[in-house]
Amino acid sequence: RPVDDCWLNSVRLQVTLNNFTRGADGTTTVALTPIAPPLAMFASCRLFLGGQIVEQIDEAQTLAKIIDSLQPTNRRFNDTIMANPFGDTGYVAIPKDKSRRLLIELPFGMFRQHRWLPLHILSQLVIELTLGPAFMAFAEMTADWSLSDVALLGTCLHVDSSVTAQYHQHIDSGHKLAIPFQSVTCSRHVVSQPEFQLALSRSLSRLKQLHF
Image (cartoon, rainbow, N blue to C red; front, side, top):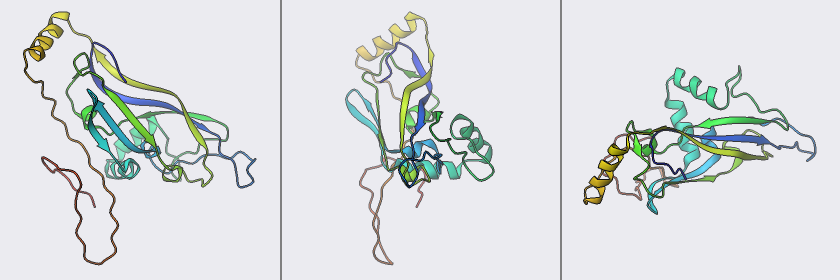
């Protein structure tokens, strides 16, 4: 939950991934091999503002793989520098009983838009991430790991107090401060026939892209 009187931008999640994985015998320590971007460790992501859900992204593990596969090569390489580096055969494994620091870009449209967020006005901004099945993020069936040193990093801009006072006066007068952004909706469907129809469970004001 970020709390400050600044303008916020460039938000990233920083964690330390600790490898406790054991082999089939249950005693021998082995390496932990990532097979997807770090976001695939989470099953769902939710962003709250003022106690209300602003964004809810389910199937975050599938979304992480789609985003990664559609990005340009240079962008994918830059992302691996912040998290799991690439080797000759894929992601470089985390050695046995070792840790790796990860820097993760969150999927929320609120944080991906280019405008600075007035953190002094956005009350109760809360981020909730739910861990998902390990097999979606790692190759080992006996994957055992934990996250520690969790921190939310961002660029904070502090402006003159007179500027802040003008924004508060605008809000206190009953006016709105619109922050447009693009978000993502993910859903899973079970198809049992050659011909089928899919129905989205959420209402969308505008549809920009559709991935099937």
